[in-house]
Amino acid sequence: MFATHETIAAIASPPGGAIRGIVRISGPDTTRILQTLCPADCCFPQTASRIGTSIDLGDPLGNVDASVLLWPNERCYTGMPSAEIHLPGAAPILNAALERLLHHGARMAEPGEFTMRAFLAGRLDLTEAEAVLGVIDADDKRTLDAALRQLSGGLSGPLNQLRTELLNLLAHLEAGLDFVEEDIEFITQAELSSNVQRIADQIQAINDQMTTRSGTTGPPQVVMRGDPNAGKSSLINVLGGEEVAIVSELAGTTRDCVERTLDCDGLTVRLIDTAGIEEVDDAINQQAQALGDQAHREADLLLVCVDLTQPALRPWQLELQTTTTEQPKNGQHILFVGTKRDRCDELPPWAGDDWVLTSSLTDQGIDQLRTRIGQQLQSADAVESTTVSSTAVRCRETLTQATEALTNALQVIEHQLGEELVAAELRFALDAIGRVTGVVYTDDILDRIFSEFCIGK
Image (tube, rainbow, N blue to C red; front, side, top):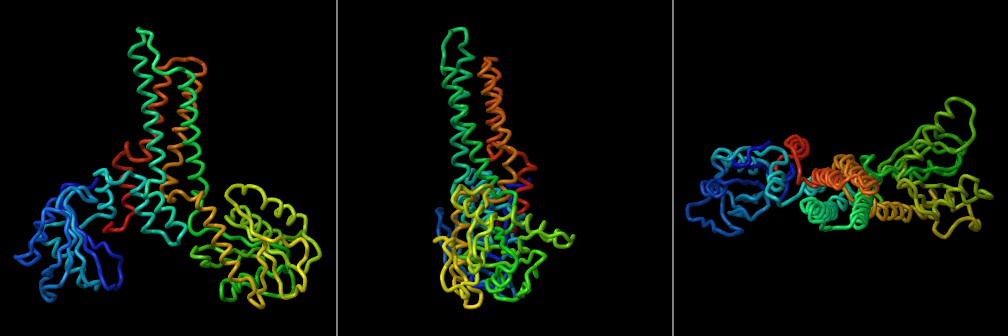
């Protein structure tokens, strides 16, 4: 565990040149250390203030103009006096400012130490602290939105409400146990069973929602499937802006899965081209089909590429077309893409209104396809990606334990085995929920979570 009584400092802005940079300091000696670096006539108010001043960086830099954002008491992010020094963003200036802070009594902050102090001060719960890391590490709009939702209490809010309801149920149970000889019933068995079942269902729903994409890392996968020579290779080349797949009039030129990273409506995705679907009898092509099938199963979005000049849909295409009108299963969504539009004078009757019609030769529909990919995945993620991946991995098993404890409590109620056993199961569920939000925690949990942060956060 970090020593919370010490004053810590670090550069808080990202590496690299910028107009402005930030050096952060927090701890009981914050104001004293700042006074040693600022001019003698600089005034430090007792309330949160922005101070225009200069900072003495020593030789050879001398005094440098700076803005100091000061929180001189515990009413701040870390729960102890803190400040941010805003300086020109040149690395030598920021490093010199940090060295001066360390020279006058601060120590170098450990990774995540500022955020951990905020957690220990009650400014953030554990899921919100992990969301801070999610915001820092977000590499596209999808992951950023998920982290921001979690940071604003999108996960901890519902869980804390359920924990409060469980505490109330436990209080009624224990009150009944205290007055068992008085024959006073604080809550009926029917009310108890109904409320425990409702809370168990809600926790399971949160866990299911959290698990939808927790098994995947990195950008969502968009997998292209189609017949041999359906135009998939040409499409990935046009979308990616370079020749990454072999294009030929001969069918079956793609055997390996070919990948390309794309920006689709502000969302980074992995676009994967697979071998055309066909019956094969040689080992190499069988392996190519197996790779395509695996990518198909793991896809977040399936692009079914259909040559608009073919006379009719294949049976597997008809089956997938039916699937698109139903609720997507396992988080996978389907988008039909008509290819070779430039070769088709009239659209076939089986091309639906929601299809994206494209031509790799004329670029028709290419921008629309990028937009549709991004919109469809972001629409799905508005429901599915409610947590950052590190939180989902940490919490999945714990919430499962909470649900199992509540299920056990329901069985005890049903078989009338005693309210003492019901209370024991409720306490176990409360402990599990508390481990998710940080009401219950251990030093090794904190060390594991906050060590993933960068220094200065």
